Image (cartoon, rainbow, N blue to C red; front, side, top):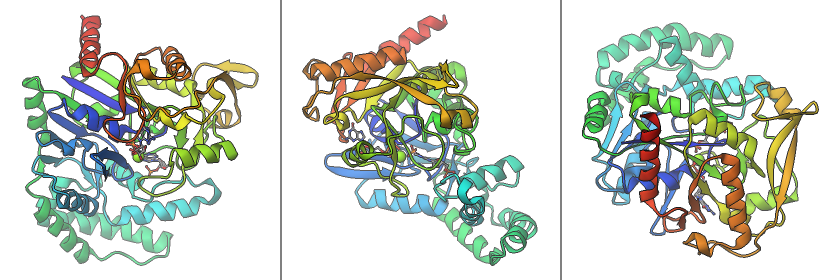
Length: 442
Ligand code: GDP
Ligand code: IMO
Ligand code: MG
């Protein structure tokens, strides 16, 4: 039983909270793309956890947590995170790291920052974690993989070529900065290998045995569909595929095994970094939304850009990922807003667009078309049943469901696990969606 969970917007939709919720009914949770550019927050029994690399399912004692082949892994950051989690009494015995996952090497964050500086006003606003340079090296076939950490002689030989012949010349000749020391890197990474050796494995048999036993496997998306390398607002995107398709190549799971794709969407829109965002509110209302929603990056602390819900993006994400179930988060943040606006279309040179345009200049200059709904003017943070939602809040949720053309199964009204409304009868409803999906395939 495979469920893919993807972010439907520009990341930070609240995936961590939803993964944590769904992990109660999962045997295995897999991160399949991205790296420590991700920041997934889970609030459990008053404790807040921020995961960058470890799958958010780790809080459940029996869930196997896999870092898949599609992830780019910074071993220093992972070891720190493992230590932090352990120091809070959580076991990491069930963590498995794919030996095929590519590594963030010391030159990747340096080049990420230098490239950004060189772009000047056209910079992307990356997280400076070295994500783009690491994926670029993977594609160039000069990447280092987690399995290499266990082979010091191979690591040494590869370093002399990649660092000596490619990276140091770039650092010195192109950027005029100091070269990196091969022996120091070899020592550092060999030490990481020793500390991670218990966890680094070929995940293929582990994942496929789980599938053969019909275990419940959850694929934890990072980032969001609008940051997708192909379908996002290129070049203002990340360097992986945070879509349902990317989840599969990043884990080695075949499309035929997927039972349900769930999309997580915030009840409004946020974005960190540069690039077009048609519904952005660059005014006091936006400032209010940022404050109430505490919209500051989990990874970089940067203020997130905020704006109204964008149903054009939603429609696109649903189609792109084959989303059949929605988790709507942070509805409580809209408590004090009246009226509430929803963007239902973009006007591009007088023409109404059904989907975000591939031409980002058109996207930047398009005019969002809005409809207005009344606000509810009371706190919904304590609501747990759909029938207890104020009428106007229910109307907003129903209207979004119509615009998604997909059912909203979960509405989240606060960061903690219990601040959740199961709209159609609890986790069992998800199993119904899975069966519907299977039936529609037969
Ligand atoms: P992710 O990257 O998609 O996992 O999301 P982040 O963790 O980066 O950002 C989501 C933020 O919203 C976190 O601080 C969560 O604790 C918080 N959050 C999640 N769901 C809700 C909700 O329904 N209401 C409120 N107020 N906060 C939420
Ligand atoms: P989670 O998993 C929000 C954004 C960066 C930047 C662009 C490229 O927490 O939702 P990168 O460092 O990936 O090369 O930066 O992508 N970005 C995210 N924005 N949430 C994330 O992850 C993000 N990961 C990358 O801000 O605009
Ligand atoms: Mg985040």
